[in-house]
Amino acid sequence: MHRLIIASVIAAVVACAAALVPGCGDEKKDTIVIHDGQFAEMRIIHQMVKALVEEHTKAKVDIRDEMSPVNSFTTLVKGDCDLMNSYDGTVLATFLKMDPADVPEGVTLYDFVNRTALEKHQVRLLDKLGLNNTYAIALPRHLTDQYGLETVSDLVPVAGELVFGAEHEFFSQEGSMRFRPFSAFYGLKFKDTKPIDIGLKYFAIESGNIDVTVAYATDGLNKKANLAILRDDRGFFPEYNGALLVRDDLFTKMQDIAPNLEEVLNRLGGLFTDEIMTDLSYAVDVDEKTPAEVARGFLREKGLIR
Image (cartoon, rainbow, N blue to C red; front, side):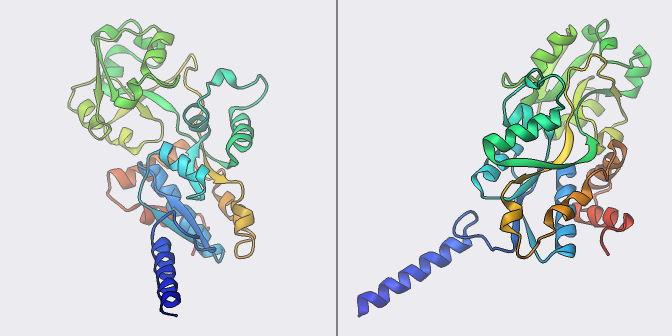
């Protein structure tokens, strides 16, 4: 009898402990789990998801500590989270490890990525958000004025006078959207190259330690640093259309408490432009507003929440 009681107590303790550990035990059936992103844009979008879902359904949204996109995708595929903000170009190059050349003629990158990700990993993109947060080559405006630069090709004759700096990841050997294939494609030979911690990149360009960098088109810090974006006139970088990436079983899982979940999430579809997202990111990165404050203010302005 005593052994039975002890065994029951141990089982109860183990079950409770599992419930307290993220990723262990059964998740709450009414909760959508998201691991937050590392950039303002992703954090803002995740807060918009939380605000919309909790106002228009009976479901809850649990936004956990940030992860890198690769780690977040891994947890999504494993089933330890339910959705993440992403981009069709990221899914193609980073998650599927494919190149734009792999996209069949006559098929959009978005459609190809969606079909392939669903077949391989049972995840899919919802409606495009409207922004294209692709890689962009950027310089301080005084340099574009000095050299008369408008396109990336315009850099070719003056690259030898300029220092290119970017986060360490952009100089890695993995993937086609990296410095070596980019510089070879355009025939760019810079005076020097400097891998920089991503947190110091904008300081480095504002202080003149580097002259040219790779940025994201909708990053609010581009505006703060007064950077000009050069047009990718030869089309090296693919589109990076923003969209929510979800597990395909999410809507079945939430059917009882949130039968309208997909429709609610797709209210973000087409809501943004590059300019709008730049301003929202600027409000977080420069004006030091919280992602939740920016997200809810924008959704109220659009009449999507109270």
